[in-house]
Amino acid sequence: YYDAFFAKCAGLLRPGGAMLIQAITIADRRYEQARRQVDFIKRYIFPGGCLPSLSVMVNSITRAGGMQVTGVRDIGRDYALTLGHWRRNFFERIEEVRGLGYPEEFIRMWEFYLT
Image (cartoon, rainbow, N blue to C red; front, side, top):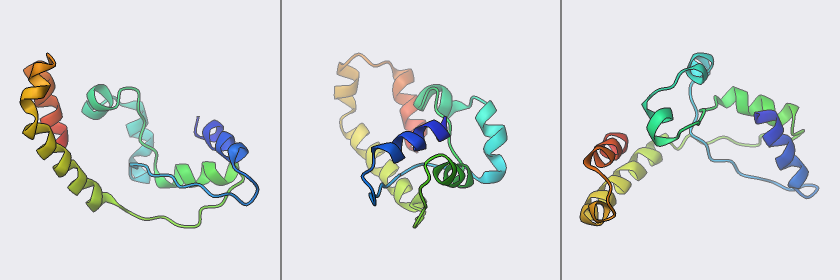
């Protein structure tokens, strides 16, 4: 489905257009095994999700989309900081979350992910 996605993206761009993709990726060496397994993240946080590897994305972008990758930036540390901010905000408003009827299991699940 990456090929179909990037072919569609290429078709939506104007000639000479550019696009930016922000993605959480998995190491190339772990991609094949991970895409066949359902872990905590796939089951509870991003149901049906599949983390791409960088090479899988780049290959699909160039093959199916006919586009070229002009830069890659690792924002893993930024994402870790973002998760910390989300966790703080979540627990600052925890009573609102409970007031919406979410059970403690839901709260613990998100605490686990955001930690």
